[in-house]
Image 1 (spheres, helix red, strand yellow):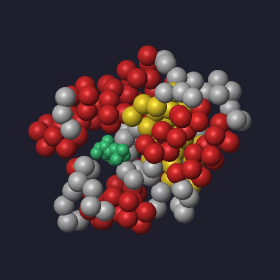
Image 2 (image 1 turned 90 degrees about the vertical axis):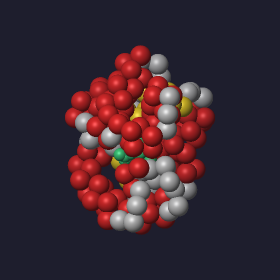
Image 3 (image 1 turned 60 degrees about the vertical axis):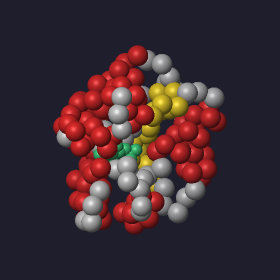
Image 4 (image 1 turned 135 degrees about the horizontal axis):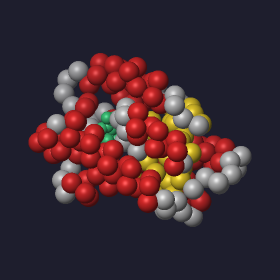
Length: 172
Ligand code: S3P
């Protein structure tokens, strides 16, 4: 069993729900990178983006990620969809844990995030076009994972079970 299981994937791919369930089944702690950022910053992700911009958010994201991973406690970590953009983040993730990418289709993302107001990168009228462009741009980074799991048409339970099955093949 790897010490840290790290979930990556686009917004709406189910990282948080799946991560919570996998951690529960493994009896280990669940860590949410976005929640850690919000706690450290003392304000919401929307507020960080609006007040300081995306670059400032990415700095906070990298700092929190590194801190969580380098502390070295085990668990399941769900990252934000853009955490994979930074080469350094990808390097630290691959070094400190087993990286599992949850693949999701654009249609699923749009259906799941419809009406959500807490994703600043998808705010506004042209959300579908922006989501499509971001997904395309990030595909190469999501591919940089130890395991990729297709979530299309699968429930949170299905995806969690698949991860648990795949984890059996890995040692610490
Ligand atoms: C982002 C994804 C969000 C959050 C922020 C930026 C992204 O997390 O970190 O809004 O760049 O894809 P989720 O993937 O949990 O929605």
